[in-house]
Length: 169
Image (cartoon, rainbow, N blue to C red):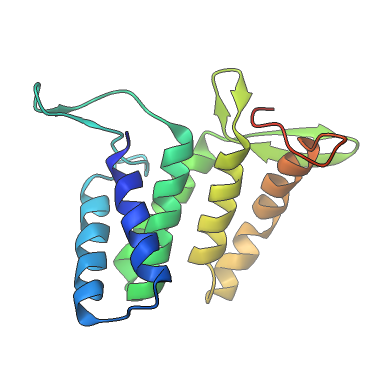
């Protein structure tokens, strides 16, 4: 399991409980710093650490990578420090670097592929990460506006006739 996902869950808990104490701020900073230390050169995070071999495993999970990006984005907003925003944008770029676009019904959509499919929750978490990271940065929003629309369009294309969504599309 992506250690960053656990950290992201902790970040969500602390951010949404409304407890804005210094203690929580310190814990969030510690978790966010840890995420930055586990961020790879390509912007993604190390997925898991093998304690027996004392090394990071090569296994990965793209949905948890997107969740890690969103968790770091929430921490960046809460702490309001540039290094966390930079780490978030690095994670977003890492996910987008592997993304693909396609056109259907004259509309372009974007997804992050996994094997020969896509996971819609990856797109949803990536959209949330981008929106959180660009929240108070209008120039950054303009840069990501088309990408946001393409990511959302992929989710729309994956909607079933009954209104639910395919998990993989």
